[in-house]
Length: 341
Ligand code: NAD
Ligand code: ZN
Image (cartoon, rainbow, N blue to C red; front, top):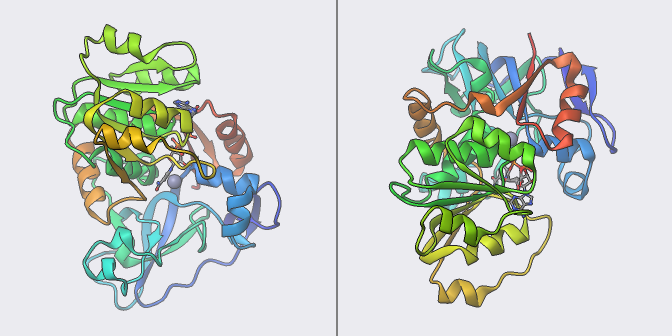
């Protein structure tokens, strides 16, 4: 089969012909139709410090996918050949304290497809049947291929009650933009999204009804005055990994405000803890998606009017993957989807 592999410990990915994966009794074989390129894939392409520490070579990369089940292991029940599906790319252990409590997304032994295990940038993918998420007709394969990052956005956005609240989202990358669409969908009042990249802010306004703020040019005090906000934002969703964005968020939250942190800072970064204490702020770290509560919620919202399709800005045949990666690396695109058929 055709696949994209990290074949050598240096920048780039290579198209290879690999044997199709063999499935075990509890697995399914998925014929991949569409895949999304993730920021994680860019780290792997660039072969940065994190990738060098984390990713074995060789490895087929990619973890955002949709396709159809073409083979099932002998223990698999409740699924069928031809079932369209996406799936959770985090392969969890079942022995930890949290896993045993049913909080699968908190299992410390989690391994990721396309990061630690063979991934989805391929014509075929092996996946434990447990991880399969069937797709309803209302969700086509290109949306199915970006449910993983939409799930990050949904997990973060639903961390706190947003109904009638003023929400500040820092970072208008694909995930920040999708989180803004979710905040709007579930009934937030003002949804303000910040970035320093005008192209990204422009894209945000095409996906959701948001107030875009270029923090390199505009002062947050002016934004709050313009929106007639007396105190500050009720909830902050940090989606940039940028230290200044987090400082700005803390600064502009109400007393007792709540922050969900998804963005990953590049290294250790200083935090003004006394400010957080005196403002009585609650902070929640968010990793991955709740398995499978986030999947349930996002599919329900997509079936009921949540539209995130405009966040997909580029589509390429898998053979043209290099072009897709180049556009993602430019930092100005939304989601880039590769077609494997
Ligand atoms: P991205 O890199 O495409 O977007 C981040 C955006 O933040 C960029 O548009 C950038 O211009 C903007 N930014 C930079 N400085 C800023 C500032 N001072 N204020 C406001 N915005 C600023 O990332 P993405 O793919 O949308 O992912 C969002 C974040 O979530 C990343 O940090 C990513 O690593 C992280 N992530 C975490 C998880 C998890 O499980 N915790 C999963 C996926 C992604
Ligand atoms: Zn991803």
